[in-house]
Image (cartoon, rainbow, N blue to C red):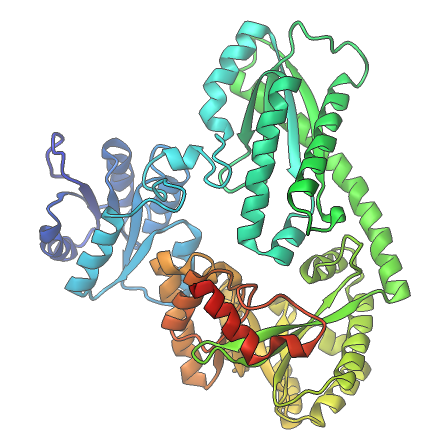
Length: 568
């Protein structure tokens, strides 16, 4: 290791066992006027990073003792070092390796052989990160690791020392755990930006309501980017002798929280706004480590919520069975827009539950049906309803994408045949969008089945490309006509180089097999522009239009008006 401990210049760590690579990177980085530290293996890199806290760490993926992936994961998992910008340096440029880098929290990725300008520009961008819209540095200092950026609340680790002091001083401590119901439904129905605002408001209400209800209350987010909260408070001197006194306090808070959120978000269904609460009390035991006592109390409060969730699951199962029995579903159409022209290319066909039910959102409806072994019963009525709706509307010259789980092809030959016959009557207008790729056990057999549909003019799309290596295997084996880029890559695409590289690779892959790319989940102008600039062909998401019952609402004029309004 080399470099002065007294330097005030930005510090960059280069960890690579290849001296030629280290020398090359040193040479490239000279214009940045940084102090350069070097190590030859992963263990030494971790020690140096923990000691010196460099602004940027360039980690060779294949170095001795610990891989760059392991070092990155270790750095990002600890508050003190999680703010270090990690760049993985490797000769392995496959999509699988970049996915791994994204999953372990890397900030960027450099592939050998290097381009001087690319190295300098990417490292400079990490050194000069600007504050986000809320004024905080994005993951460059440890404050962002211990404070949840959506709600601005501290996470539990940052208040742990104070909790230990209180437990010793007071001899007891109260805990209330608050968990949001239907997280996936809210986010899928309204989008991540809306859900962040919902979460932020929930945190504000909890903070304001906890103080008058609980003595010296402290509210914390369970973890960064989490959807649960803990309230810690003093219990000594309070009259909590009545049976279930804690539970009553927690339930009163729950009712107030629900009422406030329903008033704040009147356009949301009332049934979607709900919270689980659980309560516990810790009695100080000096023979047990303080951290264990606190975390055990948190677990007790959370376990009480789990019991409530199980009861809720039974209720939802009964509700879903009734929906299936009475065929209470609606077929909707979400426009898919051409990225360059901003005209409507086609529609994804979606199924939604009753408006006043817990299953209004498509994702929630089908995810819960799979979980409760009711997927096929639901798919059967969904296909029937979709076919009826398609026969009622003018298809014009649009494309229509229909979601089908791969396992359905083996279990529903008659119904699929009926759908395929209708599709064949409208050649080149329908696309089977495949989900649940894990259910494909034999790609060769499955591809032959898809070829039969292709002969009838039915195209094929692979859903959630970029979500894992399985999606890449499906693309390679099935050669789809469309590749749908997963929402997780689209979110914050404009600011994350690894995501940009992955999308570029998917675009290149699509070009090689003659497929079109579709990015889903577009919610902001930044996401739209990033996808367009990276060469995505087609786009869909709430930025353009929500799912709707009528096709006429998705005309070109609507998409253009939406863009004009956003620009202004």
